[in-house]
Image (tube, rainbow, N blue to C red; front, side):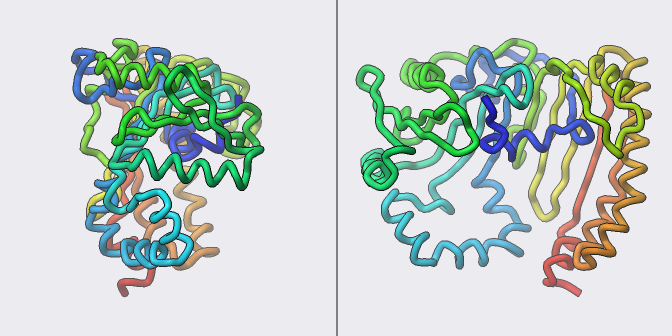
Length: 333
């Protein structure tokens, strides 16, 4: 099942040149960092702290007014009234557990947490069915109502429901949704694999976004201008054990990435490829700046991105300062 359009925001951050891995840290699988609703099959998990991002200094300074203005529009106001939802106040986090052979065959459960009105949401679904009955419908599993969604470019339907008034679930299969409902009802402990739980326990759960996952099968890599030897790259990726990424949105925007390899030799080998790739990026970034002069301040920060080999891990860091973003949006000289 192709879910690239659904999970793009999460998956694009994990491309080869920006994928990351953190060395596992001890921790029990029922840690509060590990979501009990993440499916046991998960090999990758993520958590997006929406409320924290909206309350960050940089968003309040450069984006919050524009967001509020957009929400004052007639359509946005009607939508919020219909759903009984204020996105700026009522949505807390978006997280998920994903797995599959590759990005073209992904499955998973997406979890939206906040404060919701089940009655209004299902009334909104009923209106959507009246308008687009071929795309939206209600199916039942026991006493649970599931919203069946047929989306363009996704060959199979998606299923959504509310586990409670604080949790909305969306999955690639109704069995996955029902397992999430059962886990929420029983308040069961986390069931993800211990090695994945260890990665999660090493993450900063207060970060704006974190991702971590076990390395999967490496498919064919098409020829591209970034990597001169794709066969060498493929062999290097086959030595990757796990990956992680942490994004922090505060007064600045920073991203920490790492790749955890099988041994120090493979880390040194792939670390050289990563460094070479970043060096190439530094050469091409100014060219982009010539085409988009308003982005020069951000490009200058991106040119400072760094990588290093630390034991079995390859670590990368990128930071874009609030000043650079202010200049890019024309808020500062």
